[in-house]
Length: 282
Ligand code: A3P
Image (cartoon, rainbow, N blue to C red):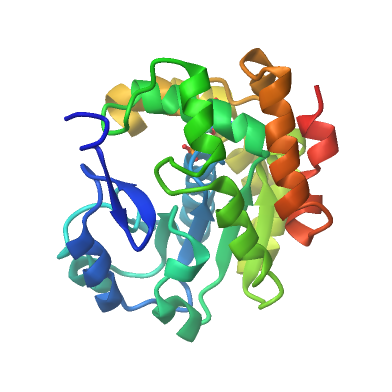
């Protein structure tokens, strides 16, 4: 498939043709959310697989059995998947990159708790660039500069990082939403794990939390990645660091992201959580 064929637009946002379809989006309204669903929401490359693994380990420790997991994202796959998901036992562990306004209403009706993971926009861009070039279902780019042009204009799959984050900002006080950042998880994972336990009311012991922590470090996850993610293991678990953006960004590109951050997120609650000055200054 050509780069153009690998993406399609639905309600103004680009999605990967191989993984998503209009029919599946339409069928998503059949999904019946539950109060005890665990729903992880992320813009791509912000720590989705990391957080999924954390919740998987926590739910396993809590219930002594693996949670029901959607293979891939909530929006991936064929339209029949939601009927199948409706039959799955609780707790169900779900993740999605869809934007706030496309989250099916059923989750709001059931007051499902949502976990939003943010990552600074520069590291997200670099991670997304490498991922696009290594994952055959995504369009490849001949150069970082070409990717950057699409990223900054929101012409990438799942659209603009800034649009995505700004949408969340408007709803962040609605309750039932816990926001964590990739950077804080990286700096002090046990602290963030405790926040997750409190939020979901998971009464894990200190020993259990320690075990979750050990199993979800970058190195443990990378080591097991060929079992968990097959051939794409090394692609999903690339570096797992903060600040890799400095390896590719030019001064000018850095300023372009600064300007977008200033315009959309500076002074907002989520903007403050991203800790932009600390993580996005050369
Ligand atoms: P890098 O490309 O910067 O290495 P997603 O799961 O949303 O696709 O995000 C992928 C990013 O999260 C990759 O970033 C990956 O290395 C990083 N990641 C995955 N597991 C991690 C972990 N346990 N600790 C730190 N980073 C992790």
